[in-house]
Each structure stands twice: as C-alpha cells, then as structure tokens.
Figure 1: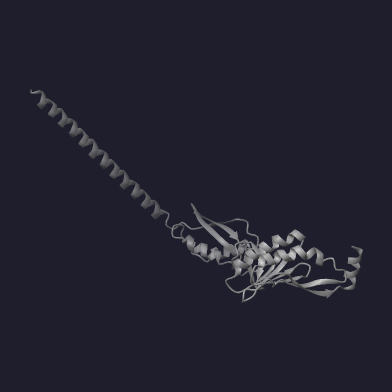
Figure 2: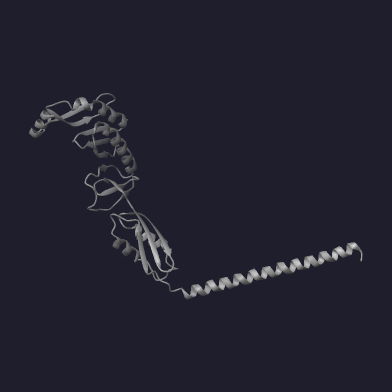
Length: 259
C-alpha cells in the first residue's frame, strides 16, 4: 500500500475514536445533569413544607427589646423556608423605632438569623426627635438615654449641618474647659450656642467659627469680674463683642470670694 494511503487510513481511525470519545463524554455529562436536576427537584418537593422554627436575634440591641424584634419578624409568613421573603422581614425589623439596619439570613434547615444595628443617639433634635452619629433624624424614646444628651434646634433639612457645627464648636470650647450643651439654628440661619455655665453666645450668620474663637480668646478676662456673671455674649460684629451681665446670687458670691 502506498505510504500516503496508509497514513490517511491511520488518521481516519484516530478521528473516529476521538469522535466516539467526545460523543460518549457529552452523553455522560447530559445524563449526569438530568440525574442531578431530577434529584434536586425531588428533594425540593419532599421539603416544600419546611418551616422556620427557630429565630435568632444577633447584635445585642440596647434599646430594642428582643421580644419586639421577634414580634415584628412573626408578622411575615414563616410557613415556608424556601418562599420566605428576607427583604420583607428586613423591612419589618427596620420599622422598629431604634433599629437603624437589619440583615436577615436563612440557615438550613429551619432557622432565621437577624442581625440588628441600632441608632446611636447623639443629640435631641427640636425636642421631640433624635439625631444619630451620622446626623440623621429618627423618632424613638427610652429611659436609658443619658441626661447629658445635647439639645439641637433647626429648620428641617439642617440636621447634618447643625450636628457638624456642634462637634466643631464643642471641640473649640473645651480648650477653656467649657461644655457646649445646646445649639440653635434659626430659619434665617443665625446661630446661637448655650454653654453648661449658663452663657449664651449669639454668633449671627457669618464666620461663626471665627467668632467662637474670639470669645475663647477673651473669656479668661471676662471671667475675672467678681460682682457679676456673664449672661449673653453678642459676637455679631466684624470686630469686638458685647457682653450682657447678670448679678451673682449670694451663694455664688461666696463661692467666688473663696476661690
């Protein structure tokens, strides 16, 4: 036989075996996928009635009672592990006053885990609301709130600006061991501050940080007056300031003389 024809015949035989092997492997894969799909389908049918039997609340909430969280979760349909809408459960839990965020996870075969993160209240806002550390408003109440929580006031939408300014002024005033307890921003965006020693600062609308610094610079000299106490400091001037005084009570006079 001619060498060329012999080589062609060998090549044909090799191609036939490759084709047979490829087709066989493909059929095995298809058969395996069908078996797996059928098995999963049968398993789902057998377990279609699996229910949520255990609720796990994580995150150690301080202001929200665990019973309230579980009660909110039970408003959802817990009769089917597979059909339970975790987004719906998340919305139910986040509707609780103190809950900032909640993450929900199903754990086979019958457990629902809910991780709760609460708001961290940093200030009262307009008396009846609270601010969290991000300057966001929420409505909640608790007898666990500290009495020292500052009071902030301002127009709707100014919460973040007010909280940012409060932190800035608080840090500045502490240089003279003064504590900022309250801040108010008027509708015309004029600023007022109240300190823990009763002093009120009128800052106006412009250069508020610069005006607070002006007060800090002169405060040690104002404090030296022995017969009266600072009431209001008006800093709404390009330079200088105006001070209103109030007489000291008898007890305050005695304490100041001893000092």
